[in-house]
Image: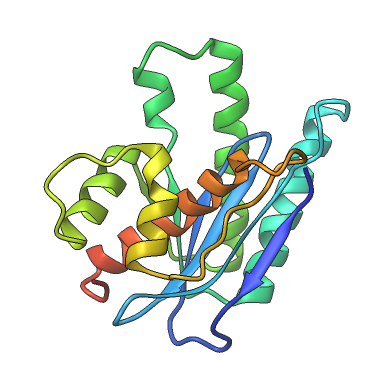
Amino acid sequence: MGSRKVILVPNSKEPILGLDCSSKTVGWGLVSGPPAVLVAHGHFSPLSSKHHFMARLDDVFDKISALCDDLGPTAVAVEDIIKHMSGGGSMAQTITILAAFNRVAALAAWRKVGNLVFYPVSTIRKVIREGIGRKDKIGKEEMPLIVRADLCTTFSNVLDRKGGVAEATMDEADGIAVAWTHLISSGRGK
């Protein structure tokens, strides 16, 4: 999988960069407001496991640094990894790798922007749910639909090689959602 970058609104005021990090795909979204506006979104793939682990981390650090330089966010919000540690479904090696990628991405953002916050998935879904006035819980697979319906009607799916919806769609939507959460939590969003 490659990468994608979509710029919707150039030169936004006080944009927030949201990151959903893993060792396979880093989804991101840039949101500003009020009112909440999706400025840009995309994803990139870190180096594959064929490369030395430290080279993979270095690659993510460089890509997040470049993204911050390119987009100029005033704050960065990162989806925290706590859900993987408490659910019991992930193996220790998977959690260690995920934590390393998550924290290296956060470190790069911290160095470039300085204003950094982490949000657990449960908080992101709760804040978005309340922000759009929804009563029922939000599932991961729903986030692209919510982004499309309530934030940006032109948000499009990333397609896989067979023409189906790629996992990167969810990663981008999650990156957007964490930025949107920070905007709402700071009193500047819908």
